Length: 521
Image 1 (cartoon, helix red, strand yellow):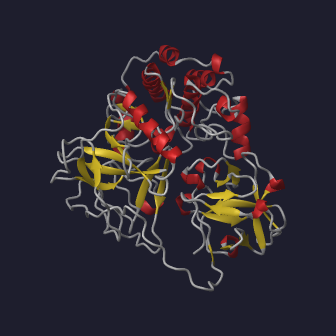
Image 2 (cartoon, helix red, strand yellow):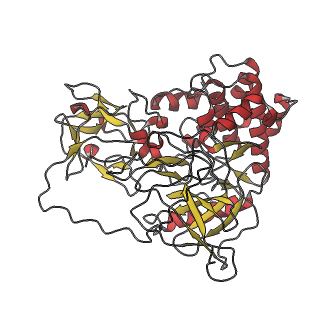
Image 3 (cartoon, one colour):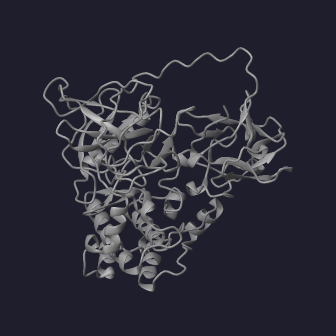
């Protein structure tokens, strides 16, 4: 529902500034949630989070600004299929438990703890993205049928619409540490496997040191009452050193400072300000509460969209003392990279957005570049769409998703029920799709369909003979999601796993980047 940009104050302080997208700003529910997020991040004044600096929830565009935290996310830092040593895992386990203890002591549950929401900074791990966090004295905003959190790190009680509190954070901590220790998805890679094994507490701990494995197993107990609290985890870790003094940890943090050479294929750029290719849109000044009167002559300049997985950010945790509705303002300006690469953090998600026809060779520069960013302005209102031709010819092309991978038909001569997968884009007929006026997605003479017209989370998506049913109709959403008419759920890449062969499924429409799609043409 929002985008996060890297900003700089008149005094030179780097900030992560989250702006509610204009297409969501009309929604009373979205605004209620955003106001709650501001209240929550203001409530969590902690050394383990990014400090809230300012916000505006009284007029469009709605935004909040937090301290910018430099460093890689845990999700980006862990070596794939290797994991971290037992020593580092115990230090990290204790540090994250201490962070959760501090957050819980302020009456807040994070509710979306996962490797992508943990920044490994030089002073220790920071928790970010409190977009769906909830204070204990807040009413529930999650709609019926929706699941709190991210699949693979979501506690069983959240998937069964039970009460979700601090114990769910402990489940997520256990799953997160399983990932840190192995470099693998904690509950498998398919939707069915993740749901089933999460509900059973059957976590993958192959090769994990017994001390770490025991702690993880305790955290992912299916009964919330049996899970340890943060204090018990800290006691059982029994660490005698500082995580920030560990050479492996320091190397992980330092590695984030190396340049990103291919931002079009990388979900996030690294921490420092970057040069930005000229954009073909113009932004409005976004006022930032803080000054006594009108915008200052030295506006805050956004250097680049803020990173969310490999680079540091904020806009999700913060400092106490803020209350919505202040009048004091100072100006903030954005520099965009729409003509090149736009890295977006949206609530609990990160995605790379690219404008069609853009020149990806104009990549952001590396940290410390002397060139100045281009100051352009975000549009207050979307540009009017060009009128469609009176009789458009059918357009065929790839249906692309996360990391610019394509929806692929597993068999070049498909039968009813053929699996639909994510695959590296290759331009073959198995990846050529047509979006019809009736809302169907057609390829190789058949239509994308929901298996057995299922409506549950995890229902497989298959190819089937076109029949005009609602199970074969897909409605494009403002955020780029494709909502299935028959089920009301969205086309989903399980766990955001875009490796060749990952099978597509239905899941609650959560606004995550693994549910964003670019239609042919």
